[in-house]
Amino acid sequence: MEHRTPGVPAPAGLAIDVVMMAAGKGTRMKSAIPKVLQMLAHRPLAGHVLSTAQALHARSVVVVTGHGAAQVEAALPAFAGDTALHFVRQEPQLGTGHAVQMAVPALADDGQVLVLSGDVPLTRASTLQALVALSAGQHLALLTVDLPDPSGYGRIVREGLTVRAIVEHKDASEAQRAISEIYGGILVAPARLLKRWVAQLDQNNAQKEFYLTDVVRIAVSEGAQVVAHKAADALEVAGVNSAQHLAELERAYQHRGALALLEQGVRLKDPARIDVRGTLECGTDVDIDVNCVFGGRVVLGDGVRIGANCIVSDCTVEAGAEILPFCHIEGEGVGVRVGAGARVGPFARLRPGADLAQEVHIGNFVEVKNASLARGAKANHLAYLGDATVGERVNFGAGSITANYDGANKHRTVIQADVHVGSNCVLVAPVELGAGGTIGAGSTITKDTAAGALSVARGKQVGIANWKRPTKPSKG
Ligand code: UD1
Ligand code: MG
Image (cartoon, rainbow, N blue to C red):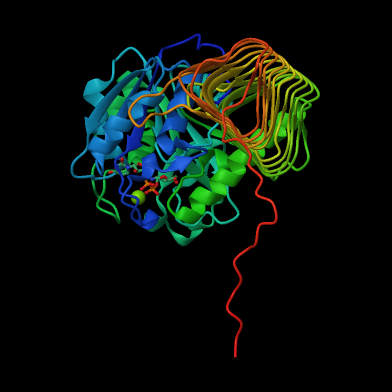
């Protein structure tokens, strides 16, 4: 449930084994990071492809690595879920046909092979499912798309409706270059056939590469049927080659996600000004103001309102709670809970392990880390609550902090129900404040306090009458 790729029903026919080509260098990225590990919505490009493979119930994914192979092999298992992941190396990189040849030993004979690229992140599982259905476990099926500017791509050459060949741009005649239908870089074929076809590829072409696309000609020459599914949207086959492409696909991904949220009835003030870098699950009547960034897994209950300019990750916000503008909530895998009807911000920071019960109020410039606040507790201004257990209805005064760290270890502060901590207090942990007690403003509390008592720990005020302030020597 990490990612938003909607799943499709499990395939009825042959098991799907994916070959993900990921050996290319990506020179135009001008980056030390391998291209397929560049991040889109806080997930590597190849991680998106793995999510899609999972959504298709692929039996296995064979990743063909080359440039940055060690980095790619180390990074991808975290994104494979329960799909079996295999890596094969392609060195040197002699073309897409050669890449698939390298994968052949890792592919079973009884399945169908779906060839994808690690740098094409926005293909929908439903589109691939349609392609698999068209292939019907028997035919070579190609994903194609019409492009207003097909320059650079392999052209789909047809006779009538039948596909005869894919001709790479560099090998194409003028007439072929006028064809607007291009090969999107994705195909499906029965493993047995594809293995036989890729074994016959050669390098007799303009780029002296093994072109995977030549399997079309070989299949046609054997009398096999080649079918094509035209994607409605060029984004489905769009690859990343530069920082500009990456930014464009990031926007496209976010736009898709925002439309899906609107479709569910989530009220986004502006669908162009929300970023979801993970999953965002929303109840009914959720309002999200502009410029919010969500990360990890965020769950917003019914009627939750998120103000403008909030950064929220790994957090559950329960029904009716309100996050005011400019809050930073970072659960970092540990999680943060904002209880029903709670109010947070503006300008509040909730760190991992912040656990706010119902009706808690956290105000401006308050930081909460690894601390639970029971129902109705309040810390409204300028405060730090770290490693603390705070009881019901506690009022934690402005400028007060828990001193939870002694330089080596963290210690816990326990504040029992109904305590009022005055302003500017330092609670030196470990320490426990008894129920219903009051802590005088400016106190440094180092010892447990008694229930119901007023505890004050500060210098006594002295008054020196008629005090003469020093004066500056007069000039001249
Ligand atoms: C390929 C297709 C072209 C299609 C286009 C769609 C061929 C010969 N041509 O072109 O018809 O229109 O995709 O984008 O297949 N890769 C390897 N090893 C290699 C070469 C490439 O792993 O030796 C990987 C790349 O990293 C990339 C993918 O395969 O992820 C596709 O390679 P790319 O160079 O982008 O393909 P094109 O030549 O542009
Ligand atoms: Mg190429």
